[in-house]
Length: 338
Picture 1 (cartoon, rainbow, N blue to C red):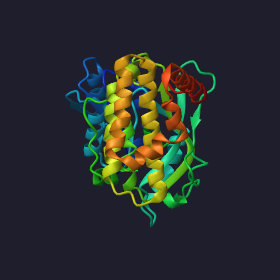
Picture 2: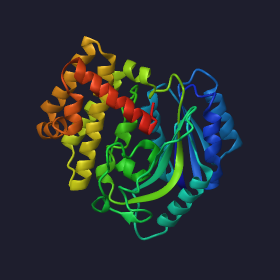
Picture 3: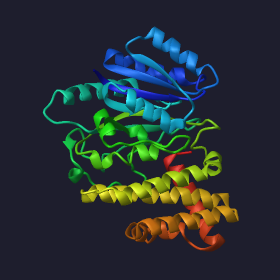
């Protein structure tokens, strides 16, 4: 059995997937790299096969009909043989020095008495052309370099959330929680880091800059214009998360608060891009989304709607919408996303 499985979803990734895969190879025989060719029409599938031929026992090429990022992740989870599982998008990469420390710690915990459900590491917003690279770290939220529970965590301040780039899950936990990401849907990485959390009992934070999250392609799903054009996908994901939060028993108080705050940021992101779209249809969709939350979970609606962020995002009229978009631009400059 492998120590760590990497799933690399690839769709027409021939121009950049090599850099990603090469960054994962230093793990050697302790890791497996699943290159999941999601119905590509370029040379992605051929490149995956060549990597498998060159690195048998480490790389597996899996070809499937196009199902989107979520279906590729589902395939990765089903085929993984590693004790732990991490998704690395084909235009991103990992830092080798941090990588070695991650493997060392995973090796250590697998031989210990405690079962580790989730490891967190830092990630870097590797934005094209940016001189200053923003690093997402968690020292203020999670004790450093010790196995802890949700009870030991501190407040996750706004914007300091667990994202796909920062998380490594225990593979059996992902299978146990029964998560099935929707096909042909963007932004499902939010579901990926949300649904398994009630099953997580043990957390380890290793404060190394492991994941390099590339931002800069014009067709990238987090590109602002692309997000506006795909806003229905964002709304779909947000609604699925609302339903999951309502239907799932979350016993730990701190975890429940964290997940509710994550829902809040999902509502804000959807609302911001509907406001930026600016047409009557989009503004109507924004109203409908908030009504959906209220119809599904009145308590959560009340807590989110009447928070500072909830009040701000729902300021009335053109002036209110201008304040919202101005706040978004400030956050964009400070964090470096999009």
